[in-house]
Length: 99
Image 1 (cartoon, rainbow, N blue to C red):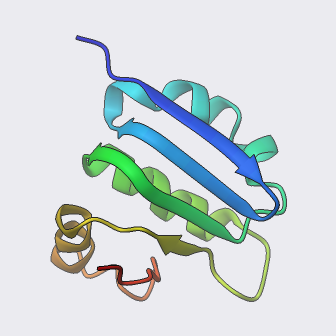
Image 2 (spheres, one colour; image 1 turned 90 degrees about the horizontal axis):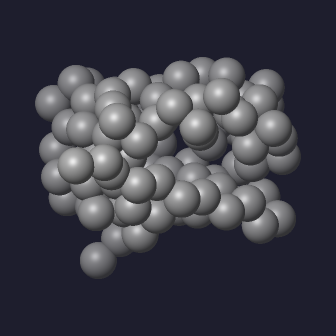
Image 3 (cartoon, rainbow, N blue to C red; image 1 turned 180 degrees about the vertical axis):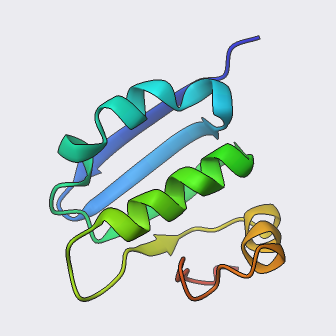
């Protein structure tokens, strides 16, 4: 079964929808330079699932942005929050606690 990932860039926000998993990352990875231009926030509220490959992609995105302020993750679901804490990435992946 193939997972789907869709994204939209509007102003300084990259919104991801679907599943951010190993099998769905190829297109976003190939377009990452264009997609990340001007992005300050990544909205994850419409993701149904994130695996460790998706988490690694978010870490890479966060470390590849040339700005003094890191990317902010918005709409982080409890399962992803658990992964961030488990891997001790709170300082690398700042996120906004929602709900």
